[in-house]
Length: 146
Image (cartoon, rainbow, N blue to C red; front, side, top):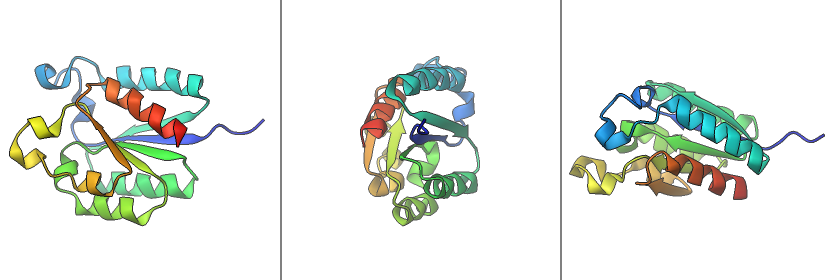
């Protein structure tokens, strides 16, 4: 039996606080809630997901490189605030062949001006933003179809 394609789902700083951090902006779903729905959806799509979160930029860089080394089909990345600051993530995404799909719970373009520039998005295959936690499921659909 063939191993199902692997998709990494990587989450950046403060996303471990989902459900309690500014629920009026980010909603009431926790990261565990989102992960559970993604694992269920992954089964339906015939893929596996490796879901991780870190508050440390270097971990995200290492994990994107690991996704490449392990032959992942795609990476779904919510880099959170690193989206707007991390040239390291931009360069890492440009340096691997595994496609990266940027996802955001909110629409950064409807928020503060400093959130309007995405270094991650400039290197990613595509971006899904503004659909709340559903954005992760939309990204998983896209990743499975690549």
